[in-house]
Image (cartoon, rainbow, N blue to C red):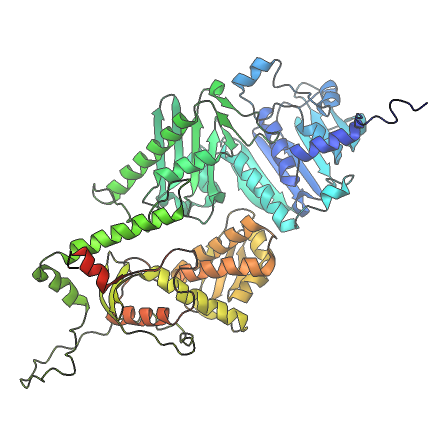
Length: 629
C-alpha cells in the first residue's frame, strides 16, 4: 500500500537558519550594525558615544556609550528576538519617540557575529559581560566597567560565508559606515560623537548648541555663508533646517538629508519636494546640500515599513509635499531677494520640463515651439531696433563678389582690443568624414548669454553653446584616452579638496582611476586632498567641484560596470566642467571657432547627456512663419 504522503513539502526552518535570514534584512552590512548600535545608545540616554571600526567594520565594531546601562537580567534578554524596552502594545507604535523599537537589532547582530556586551547601571557596584557566538550558548559573568554599555561585534558574517563574500572593499564599507554615522549625528546634536577607523580619528563631533553648528562640524565652516535657513509651518507640518544656495550643489543626493521627528528617513517624495522648491534655480540632475527636519503628528506616519527603519509613509503625503515645497521656495526667495537688493533672481530654464508619464518628444516639441515663437517675435521687430544688437557682435557682411567696389576711402576703424580666446587650449578638431566638409557658418549674435544665433547655407541656426562645447570636449577627451594620450597640466599652486567623512578613503582607493583621467592628487589631511595636476582644458577654479562630482558618481555605482562604465561617466563630467557656461565671455571669433569645431565633431546632434544641441530654421520655415508662402 502506497502511503498517502511520502514526504512533507512544508517544514519549519531550524531556528538558527531563520535567525540568519532575518539578520540579513536587519544587518545587510557593517554600516547597518553601526546604525542599530548607535540608535540603542541614544535611546539609552547617552551623552557621549564612541564608535571604533576596524577594516571598514568587517573585522570589528566597537560602540561605547555612557547611557543607563543594563543589569544581568536585561543582558540575558537583549539578544532574544523581539525583546525590547521601547514598546508594550501595538498602540505604542503610534506615538514612537525612540529610534529603535522592534527588538531585532541585537538578536540579528548576535546571530551572525561574535558578540560581546559589557554593561553597568549607575547604581550597580559592578558590571556584567555577555559573550555569544552565532547567537547560541551565551555566557554571562561579572566584570568591572564604567557606567554605560560597550558592544563589540567581531567577525561579522563569519558563520554566513555566502553573505560575507558579497561585502565590498574596506574603503567602500567604511564609507557606508560614515554615512550611517552622519545620519545619526544629524539628529543628535546634543550628543558628543566620535568615529575612529583602525585607531585613527576620522570624525569628532562635540556636543553642539544647535543644528547649524552640527551641520557645520560635519561639512566645514566654509559652507556657512552658502546655507539658507528654512523654517515654516503649514497644515500641521513644521519644516525647518538649512539648505544650500543654488550655486552650491552636487551630482547626487548623498549630502541632502531629510529627517522626520528627528529620524533620518529615505523617501523619494521628500527629496522631490525639495527639488521642486528649487525649480528654475537648480540645473536638472543636481542636488543641494543640507538637512531638512520635519515635525509631524506621529499618528500620521508609519516608520515600521522595513526592518532598517529608514523608509517612512505618510497618511497625508500631498500635505507634507506641499509644506516642503512652499517652505523651501519661500526661504530661497527671501535669501536670493536679499542678495539681489530685493529682487528675486530666477535662472533661465535650460530645457523644457517633461511631466511624468509623457513622451520626451512632447517636451522637445514644446521647446522648439517656444524657440520659434521667440525668433518670430525678434524678427518681427523693425530693422532699426534689431540692427544695434547685431552690429555689436557680428562683423559687417562682406560685399558679394559681383558688386562694384566702392572707390571712396573707408574710415580707419580703431583697432579692437584682443580678447582672450575661449578655445585656445582645445586641441585641433577631428577631421571631417571622408568626402565631407564643414558648411559655411557665420555667427550673428548671442542670445540670453548662452545660445549662438548663426547663419548657414541651410538657414538660421540656434546652438546651445554649452552643449556644443560639451560634445567637442567629450570627443577630445575620449579620443585621447583611447590613444593613451591623457596628459596632466601641473598647477603652480595645488588646489585643496575638502571631502565628506569616508570620501577620502574612497578617493584613496580610486587614485589610479583619477590618474588615468589626468589628475594628480596627494593626501593633504584626514579628509582632504590636494589637486596637483589637472587634465588640460579643465578650469582650475572648478577643480575641487569636479573631483567631488566624479567621486560622487563612483560612490553611487560602486564596483558595477568596471573601468569602461566609470570612464564614460567621468568623461561626461569632465566635458561638462571644462565647457563654456551661460554668460561666460565669448566674442565673435570664439563663437566661430566653437561652431567650426562642433561641425567637425561626430555625434553632434546631442550633448553627452542626451540633450539636443541645435535647432535649424530653413528659409522655407521662415517664409511660412511670416505667411510669405
